[in-house]
Image (cartoon, rainbow, N blue to C red):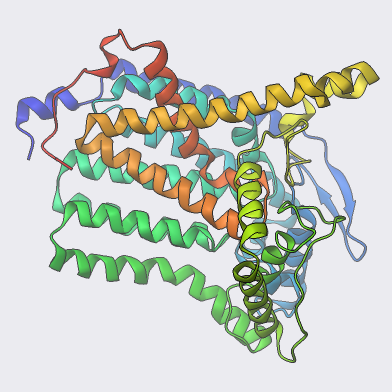
Length: 465
């Protein structure tokens, strides 16, 4: 345990806590103003007309609306295809919130997502202010709060804001536990973390892998092998609660055990002799695959096997596609190198570069020509360089800071690998965007403030890794 004097030194300065809270509240209220200025509109899906107020539609908005309406009409065990093709977690959340009044649903949703994101940023950066990188905390907080794509995602219909907020909360719980070095806080925080990972996996199951592995790293750092095994099993059971609820729902509704049935479809979009690995619904893609009799889960499983066999039989093309999808994962939100389903990114409505490209032929050539490609690639490479520098700086610190960097990098790398196995879409970066921005902010401050005391301030903590 740290001595009393060391604990006192590690306590966040009151001015830092005040700055974090002030920034959080200011940005939250600015976003509230934006929410109530979004004009309501009717959206016709072909079978239902929805009045959407105080929120933007989001990339998969239509699918969520159809799924939500099916739950309203048929109940939790609705047979609607969208409820098993995509994970039903987010539509179930919409359905639950509609109990407060369907007319208030989208207002409640956007405020709730925004409140949770602001609270997650505050909690995470407040915990950072207790470590040896305390002087990074306010800078990280500001960047997270004002990043237009990530911050404005909380005002869109979509799971991404909950996922990004959840990962920030989990890493904040990790930091609090490591700083405290208390068994009581360890049990409490790992339990809350498992619940949070399970909750966001309720919306997007691909977050299960990185979530479980990161919790395993946390537990193995804190406990000896025998007791670690117990906590690993316990955490896995807690994480599994929410995804298991989707499996039970699908079994009762459709007679098969599956969280969702779109894995084969997404993998097939990013594979094939004529594919480039991207999300191109109008392009040529897919691998040869015989049809099979069976339910949606069996057909999905069969398609997954076809895609895997194709990758193994075509190693050269597979390497090309995997490389492309890694690049697409980090591609900009707009421009000649942008690849993905972020056309409804709210940032694009106010991005001045979009106006330049739209307003004249010369502007279009500038943005999408050689100069625009150079800027796009420079942006990607600079982003990755800052991320690596930030991670390396935390690794150099050792102790708690090293574990924080490893925890963040685990989520980032594993989610990129999962994207490489499915399809290239920069929207898959959104759930881990908060963590990558954190490492990039550390990298930027490392470069520009090496001569300040920010990089060496604070005592060495007792945890050694």
